[in-house]
Length: 331
Ligand SMILES: [Zn+2]
Ligand SMILES: [Zn+2]
Image (cartoon, rainbow, N blue to C red):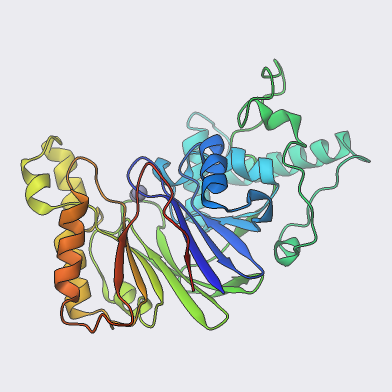
């Protein structure tokens, strides 16, 4: 069994759950912790069963609820090192601390925290626990986070946690396969204006799912990564004419259109027509712009492009939403 549940997709927040029968990971946490928990409940995904969070890049629409959610669930977060650095810098813009000093500071803070609750709370093992379904999580266990994620009373006056504190951080490298539980993960570099952005291919139980959003164009390495995929979340950000005539200032239009911006309906259709191997059961179109796209235009472009492929057994096109979770896609 493999399942993809898109909780949100678009410039106001992105988050997707990828599951095998034994392992569950959340890709990006671009809504508030509270909203993410609400959407997981709506979609029938149990947050207590998440093993890890993976981050594609540090833009706000992919990390807005990250630290609060990770602390709440006490699960590790996987980044590339440049993305982690950029994220930390974003949360502590005025700090004069070097990165090494900051890591040291975080380590000491973690030790102090563990010491202060010794006896009632044991720090999770960073990576090895991720495949272990026996670890029970009490979602209301950490009073420090309650003010930020759920209605559990007022914020404690002192002791504001470091905004970039995470229970555990693991690094991966684009192009290098790693695994979490029984899911094999291959991150691939995407062209986008962030520190070290990536997409992912997930493989478990003989099935493969891929996520590729936030990319300015389809370079050869992405086309190669998107072969033999069963469920593919693909960006279809804007309609070129709507963007050109739309409300964005010229500089923003240039950014979106650039080689490190976002994929247009046209570019996605071109990929589907010329480079896609036609083998997916489902193609999920995501990261649609609310100002410069219309879902039916995105769908039409993709379906026309897929016209050349046999659609009897697959290539069903669905659109991911910004405001509500998509029904889980299970294989
Ligand atoms: Zn984005
Ligand atoms: Zn982005």
